[in-house]
Each structure stands twice: as C-alpha cells, then as structure tokens.
Length: 344
Image: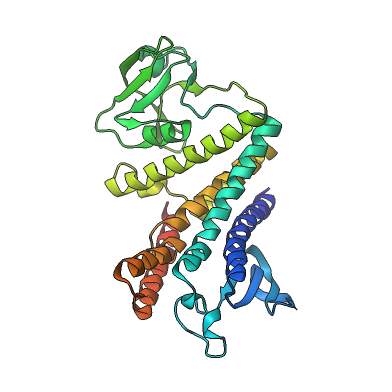
C-alpha cells in the first residue's frame, strides 16, 4: 500500500507541477523568449529531442514535475543570445504574464476538475448549512438545528465549509465558541457552543462539536459550473484565513503539512476512492498556485514583487539584490520544509 500511495503522490505532484511549468513555457515561447529546455521530470536526462524551434525537450529520470529554463530570467546572463530574446529585456507586461501563467494554469486545472466532478458525480453546496446534529452533542445542547446556516464563528465570517473548518481550528480565548447562525425563518441568532473534549488513543486531545454537513446532491451543467467556481473561491478564502491566522498566532505551525503530511492525505484518499483522489489533485493544484503567488522569495510571487517595485520606481531593481533575496528565501523555505517534515 505504501508503494501505491507513493506512486500516486508522484503522479499527482508531477501533473500539478508540469501544468504549472507549461504555463511559463507557452507564454515565454509566444513572446519570443529564448528557451533552453523544457523538461518532464527532474534529475539526469534519459531522453532528449531538439525541436525545430531550437528547444531541447527532455525526459528526466525522476517523474516529479518538470521545469522550463529561459534565457535572462533575472538579468542578461548569456552573451550568445540576442538581447531581445532575453526575458529580462521583454516589456514589463509580457514578463508579468510569463511569471503568473503557471499560477493561472494551476487554477484553471482545479476549476476544470471540480466542474467535471460536479457534472459526473454531482456536487454539494459549499455554504455552511448544518446537515445533521448528533443527539446529545454540543451543538444540540446549544440550540443549533439542522438547516441552520453558520454565518460566523468567533467573529470570523464563514462563507463556506472550508472556511468554517479553519475558523473552528483557530485557537479560542475561552472554551466556548460564538456561533452566529441564520435560522430557517431568516432570523439571525447567536449561540455559545462548548465543544466536548475527547482523548485520543495517541494521547492527543481533540474537540467535538457534533454536527455534519448538508450532503444534498446537485446535478446538471449549471450546478456544476457554480460548484466549480464556488468551491475554488471557498478553498482560496480558507487558505488566506490560514495564512493570516499563522501570522496572528491563532493557528500554530503544526497545522502545516510537509511531504509526509501530504503523503498521509493521499493514503487516506486512496482508501476512500477514486473521486477523492481526483479532488486532491484539484485541491493541491490550488495550493500550489496560491503558495506561488505569495510575495515571498523563491516563489513566482516574489519575482512579481520585484516587478511591482520596478514599476513604481521606474527602473529595474539591482539584479544582485534580487538574486540574494531569492537565494536566502529559498534556503529559509528549505529549512521550514525540513522542520515541518521532521518535527511536525
């Protein structure tokens, strides 16, 4: 089982990264940037083909994504390439499109997957509508009923189930949580819910609210389109809430998942079924796109940040400064990943 999980994880990440890099590749080629190579996989080259366009199309040993290598990504780095073919010498808007194209591709992939999932398997609402309330649970004791729409938890607006889950995971100053809900008669009420503490076999303590989601199935073309975009927005807003909560201390670093955590999610998804694996592709694709657009070093968003600074000051930022910024950021990112993998 562990081998199957590993292979599925490699395929999933490979697809997501390949789609991302293809976005950079296709727009760089369209704008006339000189491209050294476009590779499937990483590591040693096991097969290469030089296209009529002069690009080396390579297949590398390890099927974990791919990459595109362009001339002059940050500064003029090849005297043998015409200056007008260096990316750094292209118009500002063209460079911006090339940089964000990978993220856009990830988002498009996710929306397409979610659409077809809704079309062929049906979809449920993304609204936080309470489906079932367990007898004797904290929610029932507080007075919350099936059909109630949860508007906020502890002051955090919960426009979707994904965002609601993050709101419930955030640290609370007291043992009770303030739920604002809309009743069936459109009346808005506020409830104080004190979740039950449950001791797990591994010694960890969890809390239980005792309610389930609305599982009503919706079918049809229009419903599938609505689901795809609503679910995309739902996942994105929950990620934004997670990042802001990390900085404010409402969520601890232990909430993040490294390679081992992702491996576990894929393993759990395999036990649920094919549909869950397909959903994980969409979910992780949005994750990769979201992380890459953040204005942090070593990500596409970090390079976009320097382009914004360039636009404001009217001239490019010193390439040495930018290179140091990305190098230091990459090292810090690797340290964070190692820490998450080994200690969380």
